[in-house]
Length: 116
Image 1: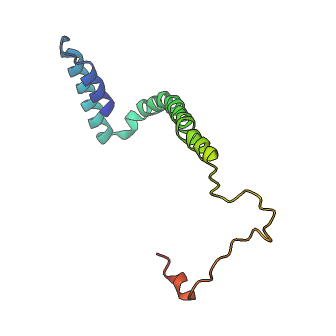
Image 2 (image 1 turned 180 degrees about the vertical axis):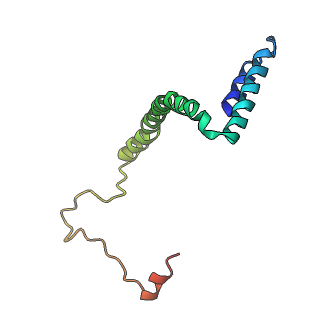
Image 3 (image 1 turned 90 degrees about the vertical axis):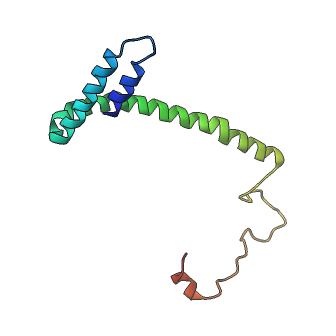
């Protein structure tokens, strides 16, 4: 139903006649009422729109993830490497006797019952 509204508003530029927009809005209302009265009747429309939308969503989501990785994550990693940041302490230290990180034991075992 929302798609028909979007198409109706897109088909209504200032210079065009509102006939196309009215027809699309009427189709949206008809589909909305039909989906409330008999949802099974709109299953082919739903499946068809899902088949069309699935590859579009796949391409857009993968493109956005690739852009996010290469435009955000990679520059941050390069900056960290240039300034010598080692957050995981992975550099080998030949003078260290062990690589264990000292931790203080918990004060009381009752804190396990108060996790938050």
